[in-house]
Amino acid sequence: MPTPTIVLVHGAFADAASFEPVTRGLLDLGHKVIVPAVPNRSLVGDSAYIRSIVEKIDGPVLLVGHSYGGAVITVAGAADNVVGLVYLSGYALEEGESLGQLQGGFPDSELAANLVYTPFPVPGGEDGTDVSVNVEAFPQIFAAGIDPAVAQVLAVSQRPLAALAFGEAAPVAAWKTKPSFGIVSADDHTINPDMERFGYRRANFRRVIELDAPHLVMRALPNDVIQFIVDAAADVA
Image 1: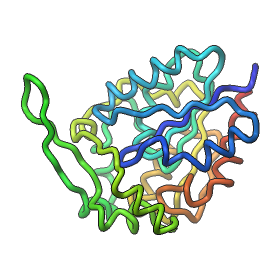
Image 2 (image 1 turned 45 degrees about the horizontal axis):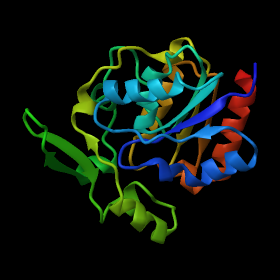
Image 3 (image 1 turned 180 degrees about the vertical axis):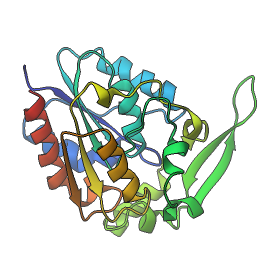
């Protein structure tokens, strides 16, 4: 099998730029990389969008999902040409399970008390609700350990997640049929690390490592993340 194209899927409260150091490193190593912008409107819709991108790629694909992006690749990873899944501080949902249900089994992280809810218009329907992180709290909760100047930029350029996404059940769990790998961020203040450990263990991932890293592990320890992804790509190839 040829080396897979690596598709990096960002999570909530972030955008494709959150992967910048990892993207640069993978490109420098000669890998084919795509970093799409996730709409962050609904789990089912976001997964369908990412799957549509994946299915247009000629050849095998390794999906890498950070945080909410883990839930997205859990569903989008059912595409036939996906040969593996990599979770970074991510949600490994079970089929029929929602983000809210998985999170509900564990004590809240610091994120819960620092979320901001903002209505947005929906043409022809009731207003939706955007969920974002309090800008002042963002550097400590979401971007701890990151250069403060970079964290400040990330805080004011968040891509909110529509509240709808928290309650949608995953229609499929691709990790049941695709080799999967995961990084636990042991110093995560956004997602309870025990939830990451539980999801990875339940899914019987092929390889799991723990890093002493905050939620944005790919920003804090890009070289470790690059090596983990490269190893996973070699494994599935």
